[in-house]
Length: 351
Image (cartoon, one colour):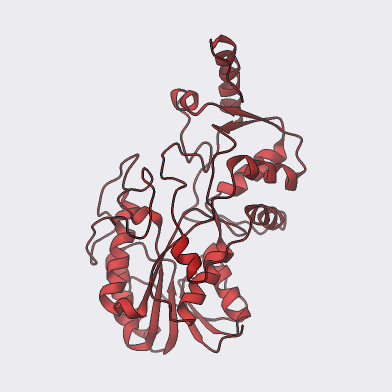
């Protein structure tokens, strides 16, 4: 359905922002992006305002380009910066959608989560170093995302604000590198180390589905706070099979016991992307979002489309890109140790 709306996107040149800009234009919206222009790319057809979100003069200049029906903020990480942005835009914007994270919860990733779960305490004017980093447990990223939420709510109020807390976002243009690493690993072939149980439920969500939901909330005046995750119908096994299928890989997958991997010092989330043993990592309830319009596609579609994108040659480095994936030599060392462990185990272990 076409929408006759004016939309301001804070960011708009990387991953989520690119899909958001394209989706908004497809829906008929007039799109403005605010970005530095140092990296990334301008999406064709959008009006771009150059500026630095930390510069008060740039914020005043941005506000002068308004008004807008909707602001979508996918680049807010420092509460005091989001507070300044929200205050500058409040007179010229009707609604504010803030893309937060499940990391804002006190219980992430150790506990099952709903929107009623406790959120980390962080002032709306906090700086980038507020909070602590623990594993498992809260992170500065989670603390500051919670503070950003408060900054927007404090300025726009509950009736004009939507907070979306996604879990792991995958899809074309991903710069973190989780799904791209698995795809390249299967492309390389050989024996692949896989973590734990292939039947473990996982909840990644496609970036395009989060973008569509953010625009839906903004244009349909859906206020509130919503978790945004996959349905949980996918498993780690189906995910890796999809990676093997799209890459046409003949790789052999070896599932190693999680306790063994922990003993070997394999870094969760980093050396084997998307793997975490904590009970709440893939137990985030998105029922409320689905009741308000969130629609998610099968994980296999996300894998397929990301592989197609990877092969267009458009992947470029991002300042927040992570160094992910286990080194080939270490992977084979762990696999040999796993073989020895299974042979010496008094109880047969299925892999």
